[in-house]
Length: 106
Image (cartoon, rainbow, N blue to C red; front, side, top):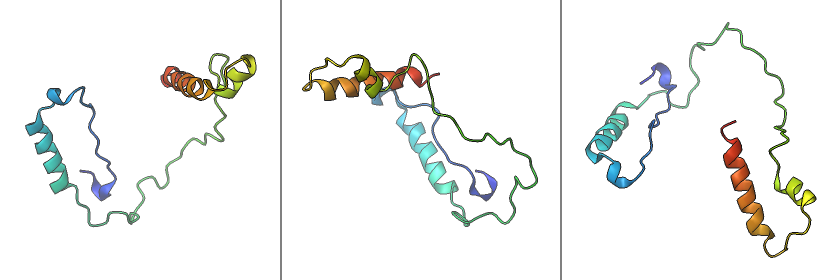
């Protein structure tokens, strides 16, 4: 894989359904990874750091995400206080789920 064991394997595509999987290929790839991904120094720091001497941009502190379109459940509840208490847990969960889903791509 990578020298020094600095590689994490992951599949680039996930299955839509189990019927769309070619089990023989999946098995072959998984077996190859299991047989060839052993490192004798796993979890140990490297003797030489490849990034030593390189300059990196200091990003500083990352600010909290704020948008006039995105709102948390608490912000929504302040603007719409007449929500039934028995429906509040359901509405809160669904609303936040859709907010997160919409803003995942931005």
